[in-house]
Length: 95
Length: 482
Image 1: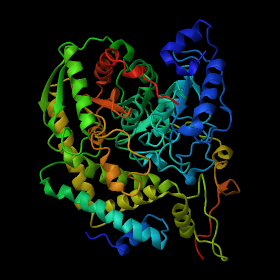
Image 2: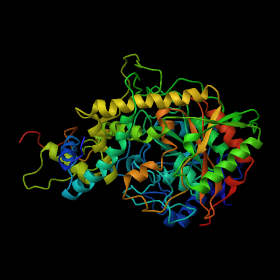
Image 3: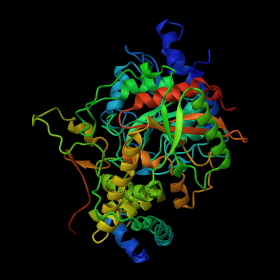
Image 4: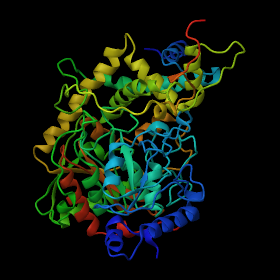
């Protein structure tokens, strides 16, 4: 995969990160270098190796579905940049 | 009395016998921080005093002991910002489980936190919105990272004990650069509830301390199962201090060939070689072993860690907490513009790079080639360790290929920075525990760390070996001149 300014711009959009033209320039170069380094992994034959997503021998951890105590709404909203009517407030979703 | 110079295990009997009041200990620390922190810059948001810190000794095994906490672990009512603009002003409504346990043990949580690379992304503590922390042994050098604030504070006697976090070496590498002890516990040993997540299959919280006994003491309190963290493991917690017997006769040590290769500083090589000889004098035997997939650990890590981070950091979007970008256009913003502007303006360079890299590795068309392949190579790395631990009690390596580097030296080259974690990263991928303990100084007076690795849940072995080594040397008694 060639890391180009276009591909970085696209992935930055997927990541919801605004980049300035200077940042786009800088990151494209740096990320191209990093991806070239990571490509080292292609040297290995891993066809018959199973993946490890984490090292614990646990799959699903279940618990009884009993209601517990939640944090008070006011306390949680206290950290929000903007709140209204006991809810998180965000800009208009549809123009 | 200079209480700030003492360890927790030295302070505890003084507090118990009434020879030291917790408030006196706190005042002594505060004075020290005021005196040296303008140069070291380990603490963030420190204003004149340890404001908000309640100097009340509770009951318990750590009664009256002040604990210095990395800015990534949630402390109720105390700012927790991950040294990022995006969490500016964030005061968690709850305590992390480790903080709750420390309070229940009578410890005093300092109301001001210590510096780190933003979201723990880095190996030098230069990626902090508050600026870099300086290495107490040479102020022109980095303390390592990402737990550089914790390590520098402990080394400079600005802290008694500290909590750090380790995803690819972030406890051990700075502990090594600052000449203190740092332990990365087994994955699942310590609850991560209330730890702001970086890479969830790798992150662990662990102690950074002045000596091995304090490390064991802190492990006694923070370890154990927590229903709030489904990855914490229900294994009994031993008394780790009981492992400090001083006896390592017959211990079988493996020395991996792949860790003593080019790129390693010759002084570090010589110093670690002497430390291995010292372990032999204490009755251990050592044999060369092979961890053949070592060279793939850094590339595997930078796929897995960034992929997980790109997902974990999606929650920082200017909605529920922290900072939000104001509308830049007269007509206001729509929601997506608000997200992108908030994240674009509030994240630092390294955070942006890693989120973009991780999103790329997970994106359609590249998932198999990068992410899935990395998970498979992770299996090979883990198998390497499993094979060695069938025959050996532990593995001994340098913690880092070099001593502390200069501030700014690697800042423009992310790849060089990543390679400074080459000896620590495999441990997180394999989920095993490892400790870094001071093992000497370079001619320039920079500390070097010895890393000891063991199989899952063998923290007692690590502590026993590290303690036996430490007590047979004087490295842990050396203090930087500040």
